Amino acid sequence: MLKVTNPATEEVLDELAVDTPRSIAEKVTKARQAQRSWARLPFERRLETIRRFGQLLAEQRSRLEKTLTSEVGKPITQSANELKGMEPRIDFFLKNTRAVLTEETVLENDDDRLQEIITHEPLGVIANLSAWNYPYYVGSNVFLPALLTGNAVLYKPSEYATLTGQAISKLLRKADVPPDIFIPVIGGGEVGAELVRQPVDGVFFTGSYATGRRVAEMAAGRMIKVQMELGGKDPVYVCDDVDVEKTAAAVADGAFYNTGQSCCAVERIYVHRRIYARFVEAFVQTVRNFILGDPVDPTTYLGPVARPNQLKVLRRQCLEAEAKGATSFRGGQRLPDRGYFFEPRVLTDVNHTMEVMREETFGPVIGIQSVTGDAEAVALMNDTEYGLTAAVYTPERKRAVKILGERNTGTAYWNCCDRVSPRLPWSGRGHSGIGTTLSTYGIQTFLQPKGWHLRE
Ligand code: NAD
Image (cartoon, rainbow, N blue to C red; front, side, top):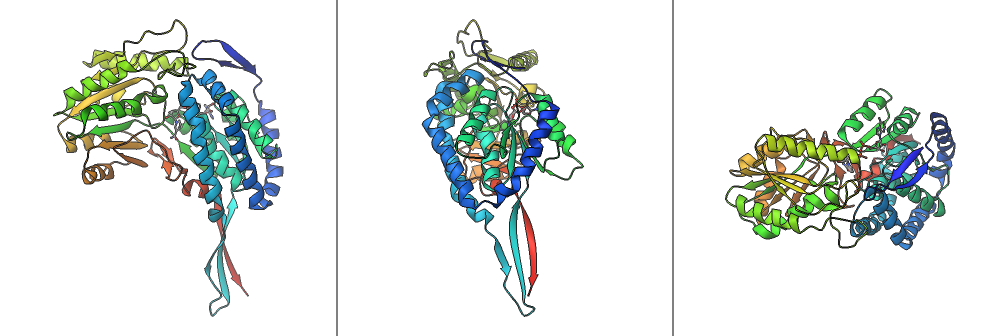
């Protein structure tokens, strides 16, 4: 059984039966049998189901927000934002999938009476292994374009967001997606591993580098598509010509929104030494003003972390940094008596010998380091195995573009951070992953091209 626990109250919300190797194999067989007919349906029919899914999500938003907050501890206004953010995503896929699926004639009856055509075929049956931190976004980045392009999906929500996963499955069913085309698989890591062992045609994983690496190794050798959306250690560089107070507030939000548990959360900050002291002061003040507490309360900005084990990582990173000379500013908020809460922490006088500047933190802790100028900032930003996003704050676009061009990341931000757009590709480099979701690249990834040489 899988226990679903509320991270704010430690109350057990539900106990769910988990899938077994046998039930998973049966689900994969059913999906295999159903997938071809789904792919052969007129595109309009598949489109209609996803349009309906979008309507149902909008109608049931307030119930779904509460479920999400109860199982991951996300502050309720942020759960509402996640649900609202589904609208433009769904809209993007509804408007852009048809063009990606359209066959292309690249040579029209030349002297040899030869025609060359490209068609696009679905991969087949895919495994969608999802994370808990933005379960609507990271799940739907995969299952929406996968379904629209004619694939069948075995969807394993994270064990920390299973109620949301079940709610998504029910709504897709209600929207007329056939039961063997979108099939939930319930359980933790072992269930995920069993799903990856099955004869699927693609594995689309969102989660940590450590797990992603294990999954990639399991799939290696089978010559199936493996896509990985993994963690990050995303840097921000604040130049000496910014509005210090405004920038400190924006970057603090990038670091602490969703209680610091976003894949593209700001994870390390480099500040030009000329404004360092003022920036730290404004930043710490912003963090001290954050309201921490019951995630159901609409005034709450910081909730608990979703997993109790993460508290150990946060404590370890803070203690190690302090032992090596970091200065620690505490948020000063009173912690509730129960729940997986962590007082937010800003660490200054940090350097790259410290874990807090090297390994993903994934919680309400951030390091701020002083730099002498652009060259040192670029060198430090590049000193990482990860490559998800990077941000630069300066009024000078040219300066920012030059610095960001030297960073090996899938996403670059000028005067913004912790932002995702359905129109732009979302992809990591290095330990942040391989492959792309969102944008038209994130639709193509669920298709394989076929080249036709047709001679009359
Ligand atoms: P996780 O790696 O612990 O788990 C991810 C999924 O993998 C879960 O469904 C889990 O049950 C499953 N799993 C665990 N062990 C497995 C195994 N051996 N075989 C197969 N499946 C297994 O990650 P998490 O805690 O759910 O999510 C947080 C991580 O995800 C962070 O590192 C975050 O940065 C990353 N993330 C990345 C993106 C992105 O777009 N790049 C988005 C969201 C989260």
